[in-house]
Image (cartoon, rainbow over the protein chains, first blue to last red):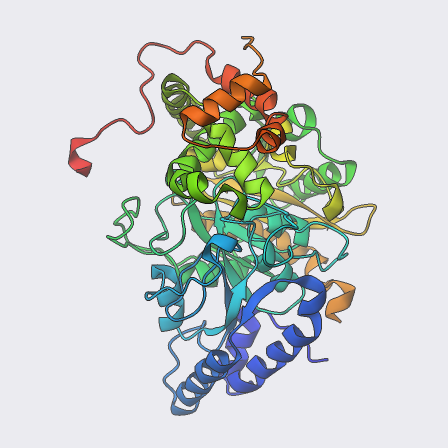
Length: 463
Length: 63
């Protein structure tokens, strides 16, 4: 079986004419054909399109006109990203035959960068309802153990990257839907600053919390992919009009001098994480100290406060969007999506305004806490992936999320693997930064990741 | 801050008021989530300073 490359390494070899984009694409198509029946990561494989994209990239390679480091790189999109002429379902019966006429802004940008589109990836229904077994397609499975959950909602992207079916892919993150699958599948995934990457053409879940971002095997690959996504788009009202920095600029600068705050109460008392998760975080903090960073604990409002604000806003905005369909076709939704979102009917006007008021207080609190910090560290997930059959319908409400605080505030946050737990599945930590500080966030995450051995280990099924 | 529990009949009325006409089984499937969600709502109603405006306060420059 051919080795699975990182995007950075594949780009280097393509640039040096040591790797054929067509051969790379064929290897990935073969891998999809062999492993996807166990993983359900792909809802649709676009083989013909992929080979055409690869041939075009190879022609540019041969003529010395490569478009950059994403040219010829096999990717896929979460199936809430509109793809012109290619079915986009949101993993839902309601859009089972939906074929958009336009690409999402970010899909277009990656295509213009020369990426090779391998297909469309599983998601929780409309980026929220999952894992569901009552939809037209089964849920994605975790490549580290297919009896286990990937987290969601970017479930197919997490599984496909970890198993080496793709080198990178898109996700969306409203309460943790990039960082959750990144954490449970043992890869890297970044939710960028709110407004940095356009959501135009991505089926929304909750306007004021939705973020678009990439998942990949390494932090460096996430930086390369985000470079290809970020930028102003007047079609997204939240899109910021500011220059896009070089997200790889600070990679390799190490951790010396970084000021790191640890929100220890999130994962020790608010929602106690597993021993392996806490050990992974403590080991990472020791690494940062040894490298010359300063590390201190900080205190924020309880994670449950952030979670309550984010969850109420999320399902209320989602209900606003879906109510017309839910009134007509309630039974066509999967049980998890419809029942979770229907609870928004119990929200009053004052409840929603109060959530918005408290959101501002929490934003100010986090900004003040970060005034003299570069990075804050917390958990991404409470532990290893649970068995997929054991994920309860109301589990996402019962305990506060570690990821939601950064959807509420819009601050950037990345999940990276910190090793493996007792069950042999990955554990992780989350690094967050100030708004638009992605280069520093990538620097810190890359310094840690590149000093550890975790990237040398793939799921057994990936070979 | 405690909140009154929502029973099946009340939940059915709330859903109907939102023009969600569901079967009794469909209402019963949602009911176990209601008390958990009501606790989250209660958490939001802890007192805030009067000057705490919503995060999405109207901004004329964004029109």
